[in-house]
Length: 404
Image 1 (cartoon, rainbow, N blue to C red):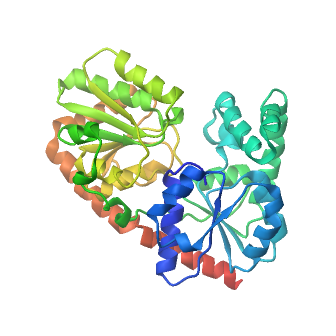
Image 2: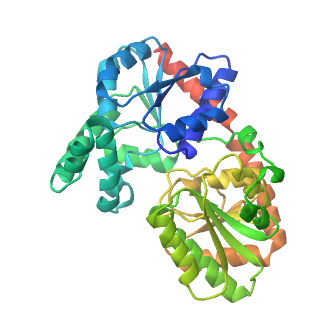
Image 3: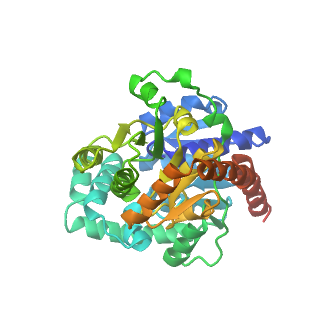
């Protein structure tokens, strides 16, 4: 597990609900991420079943022995490809192997997933991963040309072999299932949608907010974007679309708020975009980890905005829907599978600023429509995308695999 984002929270939610359903659960966690480990304190029910696993290769024998004592190994999202390859090779045929796939490893398969090549950004991530396992010198060497291309090419082969060793591969969306079939040539990939845990979102209230900036924000009207401050989230287009909507409607009483982790170049770039563009639209960007307190922001916003160029699923629109908020969502990727266009939200072309602007204007100008779509969104979410429904379907799949 890496940063404490949606994938990590979902893994812990799943573990908690399996425990509540009477199963024995062991959660293996990489000790390379102390920030993430500290976040587990929000899941006291899971803490007794949590085991820290180092990335160093010498620990894999002991880890494999512990996993062989289990009825089934469920990999949530993905692990380091070489470690996954070694583990699945050692465990194949000894314990059922199931992969709940968020998407293929972006560091290796970006070009196959989105058609883009992000070599520069991926080299930094690749170097940190290699350095954590083999040391800083090896990390610097592996991320240099031509070793980066040779190493990632080799790891794609490793990852391909690793993925095909699983007895069952489950995708978190139909969009991801298609990508898995294309890259790994896996014929049958069932889909189980992630679910929202209302308990986590309802923990905080307005009184729990200590940051004065957030307190002041709650008194205003705002649209909300939540997610890592990364380029593929397409926040630049979101900001441009919002500013165009404000200029055409004159609604300067409405703000756009973007919340997510990403201190550094992306945060500075978005801040510059928000401040340098023409017009008087009010855009606020917070480098703030989306903890349980984000539920307060959902509860008080007008609508949720998620215009990523590619998102394998995207929990943000569903988290907003839990609080009765409609969404402005990209029609590309998994988010389009959870929002019903013109009924629970509005699907937009993420490459078209005017399409995004028109959606903003619709919700700015028609309060009744916005509230109606929000009510529809909550009904749709509670009927189809709860964590209990997700775990129930996972339980059925794991039982079938373990019996075979």
